[in-house]
Image 1 (cartoon, rainbow, N blue to C red):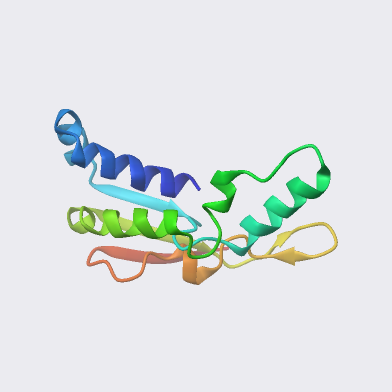
Image 2 (cartoon, rainbow, N blue to C red; image 1 turned 120 degrees about the vertical axis):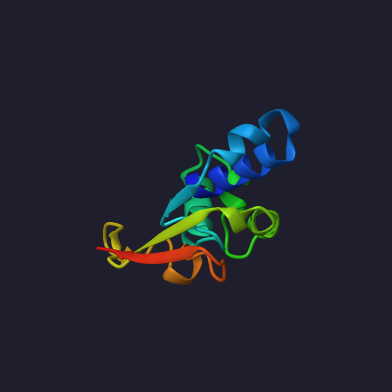
Length: 125
């Protein structure tokens, strides 16, 4: 989720006249298994929170579900400001143990940015 927060912060800095100088000093962003298009694990986490009875679902977790409106808006806005950046996306290649099963927390298709002129993608073992 941190990568989504950084993308949004960069967008806001570029849009704010008082912070544009700061934003222009950022030359490269590294995304480590960032769920650019969401994660199936978000719905699982919200279901676990609800089932535990101690927590209700959380909106910020719902925002991380596959193809949520929130992630789509961030991606659409970020594309307008990303041309000047070096972008590196790292994705997972090993499943995370979840007790009795294992799963990819962020699938490769969501962890890579997609078609950006200066984007690079790297597998992380």
